[in-house]
Length: 108
Image (tube, rainbow, N blue to C red):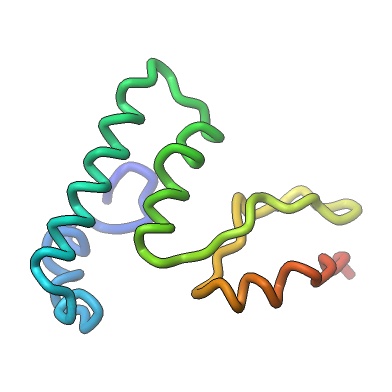
């Protein structure tokens, strides 16, 4: 497993290449994406001790945007809530727009 344990090394080295979404990409798209991620990472590495918020702002959310995801930042917790997601992810801008006016559900 990689640090953070979200994906295995196998997924990054081999597994992703078997996915239809990956196979549909042109080589230049993969190269451009890789270069963008490397640049974002290099910029983050220049920071002496980036905080979680800085890491999210300077690397995680820009990478998610490169992948085509829309997001809303961490939301205010409801009463008695402590388990708050760092962000809400949406597959497109329309879905994000529909979710914006929704109110958080209070725990039962």
